[in-house]
Image (cartoon, rainbow, N blue to C red; front, side):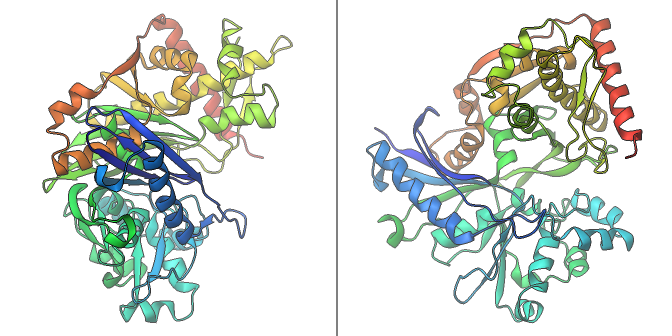
Length: 496
């Protein structure tokens, strides 16, 4: 066998290593679950050393499954959970605190204080990000405030900050490299989107010394080599990219206006906006899509909080079925939701509403409503929420999307994908390979090393599983959307 790219997909719930060949086929996959810790409600932490150990383990396991050796690896590609924040000692490489995971909310009071001081507007303009504990800046501040002499040690150049990509490269090179890429840097709320450099005013706002930060590199670039002591030979580290941006490239949304949606626990929609960042009028995030050969491509991003999690709620909370996959057949057992609307605002509503204060609801139940109607309405809610984000993106970018590329677990639901196409009145394209996040990272690495020749070659390797074409009557489509938006209005106006 010819060489393979080893894509390290370091996610929130697990670390995976996926080997890709020159035709973008999966050769082997290894996975290890990760522990998360919840010291207080809303706090989510992980052990950085466990993250690292899991990555080393899955690399060796994947090679063993494929009967390959380290000599067979062309390069490492890294894609990672974004915003998760690690601070470690420069002298020893030891973390000074557990990693604060992107979901963790312990720095929310710090963000609220900055809002009250009137900083949110200019920070959003500079970084493309709303003032929220989601992003790394406030997490760094929280860690420095909660370790002995944190600020003094940071100012004395004793401490370093890393996102997960940067942490893994630091460990892979045994401390020789402290680097990140533009996509991960753009999720810290410390990067100036227009200059592509760390923003001095943002650093001052959070009182974070610049000496803590990694050097910013291209997304597709051989930044260095793994230490020989780890894998018997130096292996090029040829890409690092945040997971959602990796999926955008894995779906080959390489032209302005192309959009992908990942149906996971929530939905993450990204639109390629070309060589200029767009300031959203709907509270969408502006972010770096990737940086190659010194040129930056930008994206608009919108998040739906509850997607696959809503299906899990039907299964685990309401006990409507035993397996999530059963939701499709149950939804198809009725011809319509018969007016039932589910607004799954269990943790509020994301883009474009940004209402953290609302709760979920099931509306318009009748005596004839069954679990099939509720299940169908819940699946439909994923499509409605996606419509709202896509519509906001289209308005911000002043262009209508031609197709929506989809991936993630719920994209395998035939009913949902057809309903999504109908509600968007736009084709929905599902790829043959669902591993788009790892594939995107592998594509970036392969372009850097010559394993893949060009983006044109990548386009020839991408294959489609199915195209869902819209077929719903326009009057019915508009009526359903109107009913959905009225239901959202009810939820947003109800006060408990």
